[in-house]
Picture 1 (cartoon, rainbow, N blue to C red):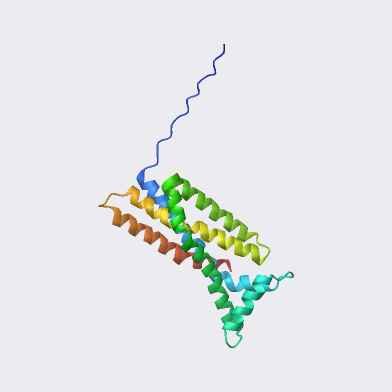
Picture 2: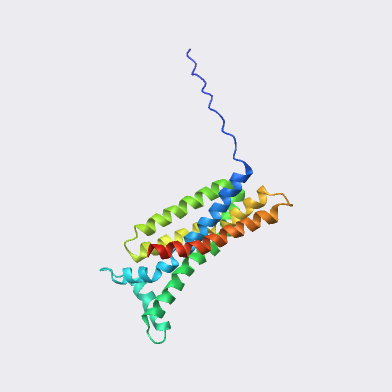
Length: 193
């Protein structure tokens, strides 16, 4: 009887804690770049979808609501209110999902959840790039916002990887990554206009 040969694959050494932490910080950075990159683009996005030959009923209602709230019907104020509404869609789902992602990371592991949420966020951004209608744009923002709720899992991973003595520094570096993402996102978006 023939025996199948045993193939011995080399075992890759695990990443050092420094690289693991850097990956987590990068994840936090990307989450907040994703939230804020669209902010300077929203007036142009509104104009793009308002000029679309197939005007979305959702966009029509949203635009009428923002014009109604602007008191004098100013297009500028309406676009600012529109930006606030669209920004809050992402933020709402980012607020809604952390407990779910953190619970899943307890069950399936931090790495699996962070990889899944980053892949989902990338899918949301790709959908945004190819969004021909306002509905697809809105779905892309909802998906990206839901995947951006991975902040709790990332913070839990920081707690897992740091000792009590270094935990404050690790959490501070996480906050710096969030702040850098929130600061650089609008700058990147403004450069894209």
